[in-house]
Structures are given as structure tokens and as C-alpha cells.
Image 1 (cartoon, helix red, strand yellow):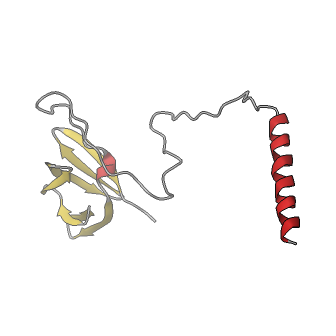
Image 2: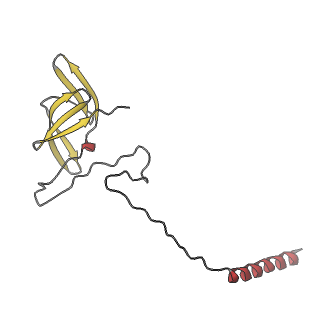
Image 3: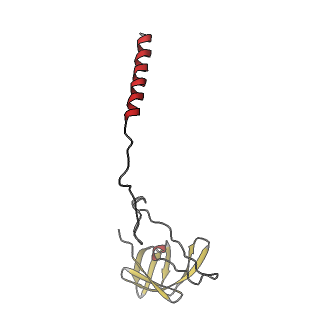
Length: 136
């Protein structure tokens, strides 16, 4: 029985070697490629995942730094007898208040310009940043 097994294995190896020599080589006619359009979501990210905010640096003094809208998350807006409050990135703020936004190793001072129905307008370096209320 042991001799039959060894002969059978030897026959399989020999037959496999003969078949492998006769097999034609495969040539690819069309190779796959993937190109991303600017500003689109990468399909390889997990569902619901968003990248952390990145600050672009231009020049030695970072004069071209811009804060992306995705750096802010407005989760709640409340109107109370003339005063308006919002929760931005987990911090309670009101109109006219300044708060710090930390991106990487830098901290930016941002002013809450106005709080409206479903949106907050922030002022940073005389630029208005409109952040919409995050709805589920």
C-alpha cells in the first residue's frame, strides 16, 4: 500500500510537470487603472469615515492658511430670549464669542459672527465660514 501511494504521487508530479510545460503564457490585454477626480471621496475609506482637517501652508509666515469647513461640527443650535447658542466641536458658544480651533500643532482664534436657523457663520481673518447644522 505504501509503495502504491509513492508511485501515485510520483505519477501526479510527473503529469503536473508535463502539463505545466505545455501551458501557454497569459498576456494581459487591458490593465486595470484607477483615477480620482478632484474633491471626490475615496472609495477605499470606511463608510462614514471622514479625514481629519488639514491645513495647507503657503509661504514662511503661513499667510495662505485656510480652515476647511469640515474642521467644524455644529451639533446643536438654541434660541433663548434674544441670545443664541450653538455647540461647535463640543463647545458651547454664543454670538460674538471667540474660541480656539486646534488643527495639528496650530491653534486658530475664530469668532462666531451669527447663529441662525440651521447654520452658524464664523469669522476668521475677515472671511465668513458658513457651517451647517449636522442633522441625522
